[in-house]
Length: 116
Image 1 (cartoon, rainbow, N blue to C red):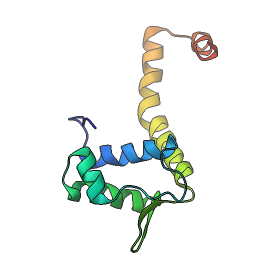
Image 2 (cartoon, rainbow, N blue to C red):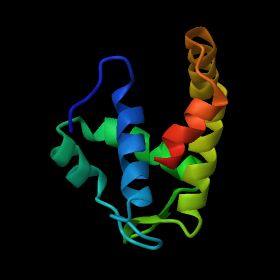
Image 3 (cartoon, rainbow, N blue to C red):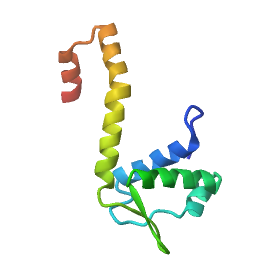
């Protein structure tokens, strides 16, 4: 995993796990890598991974089963999609719309792109 300089590593790991859940690498109830395994895989300190896992837990995306490990929660996909949609609508879409207006791109042009 290559990390971006502009975003904290623990958030990038959080998003990486969310992406794996959305892409079906991890399904409902699946055990995800342990903190140590993930730390080795991505080449970071286990405390950084733990911070990512704590964030995932706080958002009910994963649950910690004592003695078993971390597992994907039942509604993980829905929670991730809801959060990412909200973030897109609030942060990214306004910038895209601003550029559409600046470049004079019409809704018809956008519809044509979507259809093709």
